[in-house]
Image (cartoon, rainbow, N blue to C red):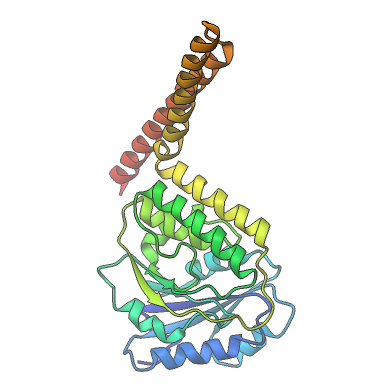
Length: 298
């Protein structure tokens, strides 16, 4: 079935865009071509994040819904607006810069209703600062996989599909910046929702990149730690605690051998580890109780 602006839709395809006048028209056409033979009743919603160029006008010329922010609020803010404005039970997100293959969308949709979220896992890195991005993403992705206890082929892909009702539970967690997509993945994984990865190609972007390698990489790292701490604090606090206690014990043994005494720094390290463990246990109890209260209200 074709795009329908009036009737109930099953799939909302959200395209967050900020000054993507060169690419937006082609992306919309590619999405329409990919969805045409699928039989889904769908809508395309472009969220223009305060662009000063012709992004909104070129999207409107394609006959799709356009929601405009008066000011540039950030990629994450545009995605959150798209989720709230979407009318479909399943939301698909694809970037407006031409980097993701729209013809992969039907493959993502094929995993529903069994999956809660399907992530397009990129098989290559084509962005600006390629080697720095690849290294930073690998380190952060492996840290995230350890913290949630599951392998993560791609943490921050911009092509994904998810059940809107499930994502709405975690909307308050999503930041306004580029780390929004990472939070989407982590929130589902940390709460044991079914997340599936579908391999996809990845292309060089059309137009100028808005990615800041240092600032945005730092935000990615903070996002991983923040979300993991929120949902599973022991995964963060316990290794730090054991590290401090282990360091303190080893240093105590070394000081006993060399000086026949235990130094104040040894005691401080051990006690610091105990305090960190206590904080982690307390945080875990609070979060566990909060989850139980939340489930009882549902």
